[in-house]
Length: 104
Image 1: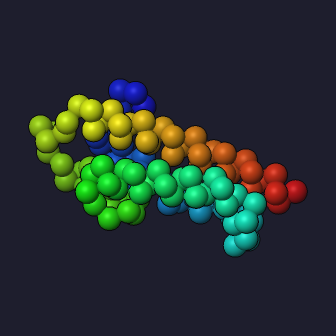
Image 2: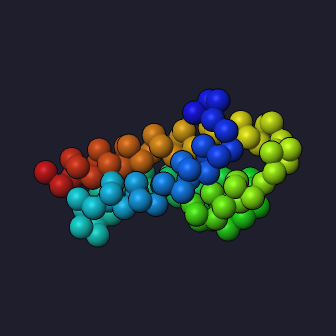
């Protein structure tokens, strides 16, 4: 994702709620076993929302990215957003793995 476009980032953030639901599904509503990872993930979403000055929602982040004109991006902000999307993906994979292990 290091060369991802804003469109790619919007798609990534828009898919995160589904990916999070799927990762948490094995826990049947008991997020205790992944509480720390989940808090880290949500903190990352909060950081991305602050960067974009939008509500702290993955859908709102995606919408804000989509509504930002191509020439409206600061290179450093885009680089930070790419890093946040990569970290969020890493955390989603960790949440999924921890949930699978806890469900065994």
